[in-house]
Image (cartoon, rainbow, N blue to C red; front, side):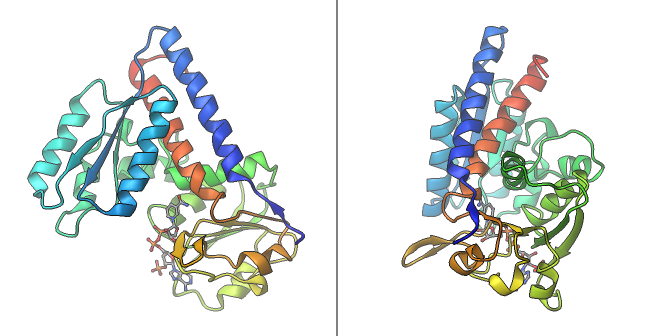
Length: 286
Ligand code: NAP
């Protein structure tokens, strides 16, 4: 293997430690602890694990756990009323609606009720618009975490060719915007892209968020490129990503593993966003 393995677990730990220090500084300045309201609807086991990790790590960073759980058969009005209650509660700095919600609910309508200032997942149209216009706002956690990894590993972005595979609102679109804001030349690939491998080979920085196990192999990677694998798939032998790790590691210059790459960064950036939101709401700090 020639690629440097990007250690998301270590970077995420450092980000969480910085957030914990930031919480201490907020309290020392007379502020209130940031409060994170995770909202889980139903009892999907994977979502329960994700939410319990978010709650545990927010408490470890000194935040208040303001978690709320609604039954899976809750109606739209009741779920909307909960979001409105959290939106109005000054103890709540950030609201995270765990996705996916049960199919009978309109999750976009629920997200639309979250005030931009408490949208710690960065998914409201207001925060997406601020990002598109290059203005300050809360950024979606997974692409924001990828940017921190690229910065930590000194990956040059200005003038670099970046290819993002996937164009979801959650990952691909904000990822492309964040890379563009750092002056990369960005190409977005998706399911209709012709000759995906050829497009990917342009990349100095390749971010893969397609949700297809092993979609990107060594033939799609320019020698020396930095490859970020956002995909998460649970297989018989544990977790793996959208990138064929073993073959790509022979070609790439740097590569994120799954697990231990982008995944841990997502929660760390959620905590960073919650601290940012709390400080802005309380008028303390930057
Ligand atoms: P998504 O909403 O399903 O979007 C997938 C995107 O990939 C779509 O834009 C789709 O194109 C594109 N795509 C699908 N098949 C493709 C193909 N064969 N070639 C090129 N592009 C293709 O998924 P997502 O929410 O963005 O998530 C993507 C992956 O990241 C999933 O594995 C998810 O579990 C993982 N994820 C991980 C984290 C983390 O914390 N590490 C966070 C979020 C998501 P179209 O638009 O044309 O359909």
